[in-house]
Amino acid sequence: MNIKKLFTIEIPLLILSILLLALTAKEEPKRWTSSGQALKEIAAIKKQIKAPKFKNREYLVTNFGAKGDGVTKNTAAFKKAIEACNKAGGGKVVVPAGNFLTGPIYLKSNVNLHLSEGATIIFSQDTKDYPLVLTRWEGMDCMNYSPQIYAYNEQNIAITGKGTLNGNADKTHWWPWKGRAQYGWKKDAPNQFKARESLHVMMREKVDPRKRIFGDGHYLRPYMIQPYNCKNLLISGVTLIDSPMWFVSPVMCENVTIEKIKIDSEGPNTDGIDPDACKNVLIKDCYLNTGDDCIAIKSGRDEDGRDNKKPAENHIIEGCEMKNGHGGIVIGSEIAGGAKNIYAVNCKMDSKNLDRVLRVKTSSSRGGTIENIFLKDITVGSYGESAIHFNMFYEDPGKFMPVIRNIWVENLNVEKGGEYAIWVNAYKESPIENLKVINCKFNGIKTPLKIDNVKNMQLENVIVNGEIFKYNANQKK
Image (cartoon, rainbow, N blue to C red; front, side, top):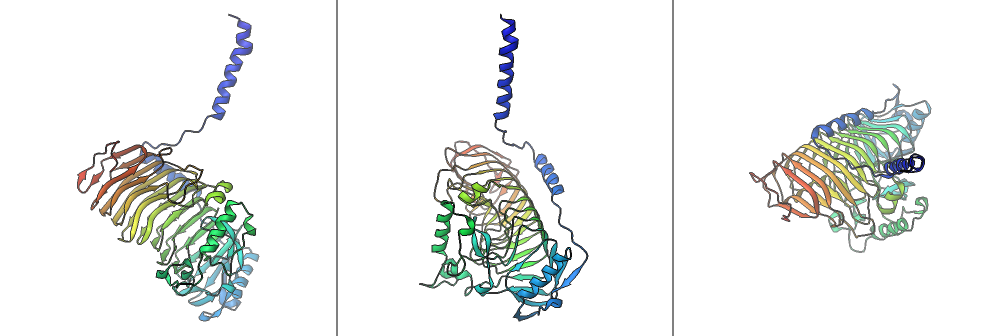
């Protein structure tokens, strides 16, 4: 044996190889072995999420010329009050009891827009009141009508109080643009179809978002609330009704608290709470009755989601109640940036018009990894289609295979279910991995399972229609 060669060449090469292997090895996916692990993670994330605090100063909008008569347009008065509050270092802009008509409101840093009990902000139906801003529409960035409450690159902002935000949409304003007769659209009337497709093309061609210009003549409806690239947000206590489209959708924001709000609208695409590519989000004690998904976690569509490289991360949904909607707790479909560490505990759902309890929807045009989804203590009165639902074929296929893995569902109790308990449609090349369902009860189920391509699905103490369900790994239905 050549000792010199061993110590001068072979052993150093071996050590170098080990170090390179360690550096290039992929991180092993998380796999919970108990619900206690996930509950500890929830506690740790909660410590990171802190609601913003504001100076003890009040700026009454009526002192800046606002009139709560439901007729006077108060856009300028809101702007003056918010700018004065911001310039002085922050505080509370107070809306007293009354009906305050206005165009979009821009929130500045360190401002808490506070709606007193009996206060209603009614947003204008006139598109001329809506300036074009950089916004995200169905996961695609563009210049479009300002959301009714908007902020860009701001921090420490809030919307609080016992008042109401009225999006003022109905079957004669905003909603007909969806292009469906049930929402007021009439044959040969304008709709969003051409503009929506044009935006898709611009995204695929990677046109600068600030050159994707829409607005009048394009019929892409604004959202109600959309802070964009902001930090330290609070939305608390308010009631939200009749949004033109999605209600609350912070985009690429961090440290977000949404608590004790009530959302009520059954218009087209009136999702309730849709955080998009956000980090550290707490959604707590909210009531949602919507015309689309109740809570839908997103991270951008296709190229815009993948290029931003910002996943949805560290979201906690706690103590919420869902009624009507396409899904109660949803991930996707605009989820190209991926999602990880999504937790939902102690929630209630009940409606024949609630299609699904947990819904994950994506496609190979999206790509991205969705992982670490934890649900515990979910009580369901009734639902329409499926309790646990995974779909990798939600939209047309592409070249970006999605990954969905590590899902834990515990103590999901359904009094009167729908068609399926668990429904899965995944790619053979990318099966749903590590799905664990434990201590769950599903009553009134027609078909317990309809699954295609699952790897390592475990059902423990799952009761379907009063009997322990025995799962066979080769079973499809």
